[in-house]
Image 1 (cartoon, rainbow, N blue to C red):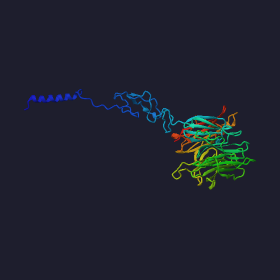
Image 2 (cartoon, helix red, strand yellow; image 1 turned 45 degrees about the vertical axis):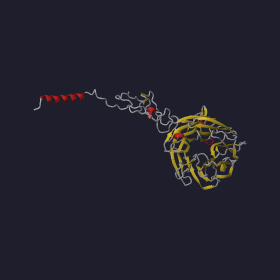
Image 3 (cartoon, rainbow, N blue to C red; image 1 turned 45 degrees about the horizontal axis):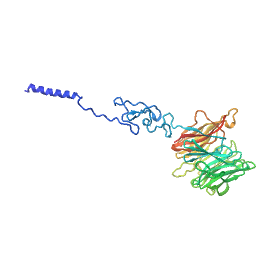
Image 4 (cartoon, one colour; image 1 turned 180 degrees about the vertical axis):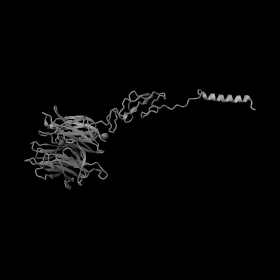
Length: 497
């Protein structure tokens, strides 16, 4: 039999062990995770919770776009009093500059377009009297809007005006009727046509320029052609290497003014004649004229030449296309397309493909008017390619087309213009329009600045387009008002990835 003393001893020992386990005051506390410090990306391991010992982070001021759901970042032990990219993240910008499909500045607008007034003009130039070309740091724009001079405007990549060069030229009583920027193997040059000294002839001239638009030789430049007609539409394009160029101009009959022939000749980078003038097109139908010449250089040194043959208002037009080599010999057969009145065709090179690294010639035009006007394209120009619809435009309005091929594909823009007469106003100002663009993916956007249409002039039938850095696009067009009388060259910078 066990002793009572031994039983009580075991019981006392067990009780002591239980009491020791219940007293945690003498045990070391468990380890506490490091609350973290501000990292490079503006993220902390512990943004603050009621149990962390750090006050809970408060929401940031901006709540839209890339800022949605952002809380203040902990920086050196304190929260940002005003949220910055540390809080909002790497996609945030205080002033949005990126074309990336995000609302970077968190103002509720993604990739906002920017309109600006570039420069006032003295008169409303036709499409043949304005042109633009990319130069380092931006664009160079030529404008013929007054007698006695041609203006060269320098724009930066934001399409803001940074400088102007005025070139004095003898134009007669009217401005230069053609003004075009071309690139030769010697650099940039201005091609323009003006009235001769007797006002019954037209001269085409070539003037070399530097990249800022200043003449490298004294105006007026090299005489390329002289045609006995007060108005002779003309165009010039140089080969890809800039060594030779094809200049074309319309020959008008002095007695009737009918333009029955399109002439052309080949010149070198200095404007010296390489091949004598010859007839490239001749009107084939009675009482028709040739107008709207276009020239496109191809990768092999040859050229596509376009002329429109028509009889006048509301009549069908024949778009005539031929290819010529560098010696002005005809290549293959002529292509003729029938189009409605005022089809305003444009020649472009298609985006490069593995089969055609230099691209293939393509044609853009607008279909006949009516309730549902369309913009159309023709690819495989000399292989029987047919008309394809690019996009419908605003019903019952005229669409004036601009287009360019960028690194991402074909970019198209147009002005949908309608006649909106105002009592007592000069009828040339009785027009208004909206500006539209279509991205390479086929997305169509109304870029008009505001709910109301833009005030337009009857000559505002042109859009100049260029690709800008960072996937941005640039467009130039003309707005005009009668009261007060004004003509304004405007720019639009918009995102079209």
